[in-house]
Length: 109
Image (cartoon, rainbow, N blue to C red; front, top):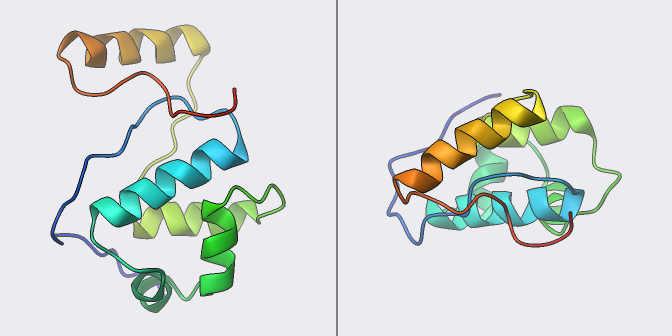
């Protein structure tokens, strides 16, 4: 079951950028979910992932299943890109120059 849910009332834009820990990824996902105006129950309904798993993921529990994490990201309309660090720095520098977002998610590095 993969139902991408979007077009909801938007709140503050999440701080997209570098993610270097499970807790930083969880914070970013929680920000995105709230930005889309979604509850954990609504993400559960769209993804089939339990609210317990989603809550633990958002809290940065490090033993979350990678497959389920990827599924949650897809449902929220997020992508994971793996690029060489130098390329990531270049991409983020371009975003900073237009003032879109900071270059990292607050938290652990």
